[in-house]
Length: 612
Image 1 (spheres, helix red, strand yellow):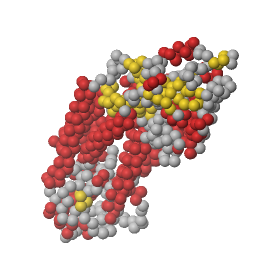
Image 2 (tube, one colour; image 1 turned 90 degrees about the vertical axis):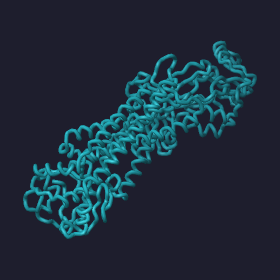
Image 3 (tube, rainbow, N blue to C red; image 1 turned 135 degrees about the vertical axis):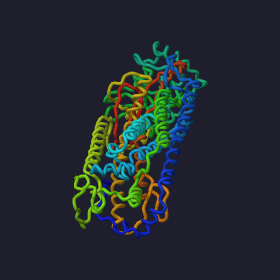
Image 4 (cartoon, rainbow, N blue to C red; image 1 turned 60 degrees about the horizontal axis):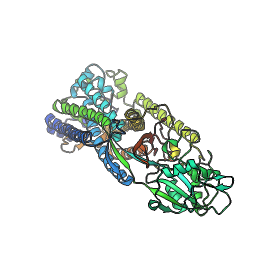
């Protein structure tokens, strides 16, 4: 027995009713089947087209692009290497194409799943004969036990083949930053390396050798003011400069012992600790866990004319420029997985299109049209039966009309409400816990302004995720980091489908009840006749579906800005052929926008940046 609400319109069942006569006269099984079959064929064709493009790109990148690291084979292929701004622009464009392809695959898959789970008239008759029921017009796992096993298997194939699209597709192409390992030397105006012992300045032999080994040609150095020097080097990742000479005023008494040591700024010095040391700590005169250098930079900039990182005032800096070497990478292994699920979807949808179910009932209008054309003998005379009556096994008993007004929420089963509250409660609780934990571990002040000033979707040394010991680097590390960084996307997709199902149930109940109050034209899945209307997109009225879709898009974007992967490669200007391939994990806070689900990671230099 299909789920129904009390109060059917007797006028609608009247053979003289104009709407019924139009339905019976005009509706034909073949025309309706042809329409949705065409949609299935279009979806299968789109999947095949995406498969061909993905296969071509994967073969091209595998055979023509380079990507090995220090003679070590990896799954990475370099699409572009050069300007970081160009890399960002290419990344945005390519990821737009990837998301379009992903949306095509998911939309076609969802349509196929709807066709597979929708009961046919034969399924309904069989269920009614057994004194049970099926769902019509709403997403339903219950129907999978009532439809043919082959359709249920195909439905699960489409579900499981969608998981890699959520978890991996966006990371097939990823960008990598190139940060330079550099040295900072304190010199006088004659470019003599400074140190202090017994009140006299001289060149320490060890530091002098290091200084000379850098082979710095002063004619090729950029002259920077103190403010320009702070701005250029006060960043977490140095992408366009290398070694630095800090020219100080030696006319004052003494130079701090700190001037003795050149300051290495390699990426590996970013330590996972409660109070991490960062590359540009040397810029700030006093650094502590409570007041990290990042928070002092605005004040240092305002006092750049009297900047004293080593007690003596800095007059200017000489900086060695370095070419930007940001990269756009393509991962062959991840692409192979996407090709596999793409192939599964294309074959499954093509099979459904070639062997479609007969007379499927997608929405309530389809069921009403079918039952008006061929009445159901099992439910004859039970126009007041409701879904609750059917679930209680009391369908054959006489029914009493109740005029008490009921809210739309009663149309949703208690089980669906329970799972909805459980899923949202767990997701919200875990998000709040991890957000609170992350704020507590963050060095420096924890007020809202300080958290917001970390920036939106930006990489900072303060938002590095620490966590469990995936210590290996390379392809396996990349795979697991990709999985973790995209897990929130999958979780939110599950939540989206859950609340979409809630709204669909309530909208279907209202539509059914409205037939008992006034004459309405039927809303059918295809080929509307006469006064009939075609179905809504996503089975919901636009006033519900559009706001929900916009909120979903916003949340997915915020999640993508909260946790994502960027690879960092460290390059030494003195060893141009040497690259230190690292994977960092970063996260960030948008406390005023949403609670964030954050995953952690250890000893990998992968960054998942938090924008959610």
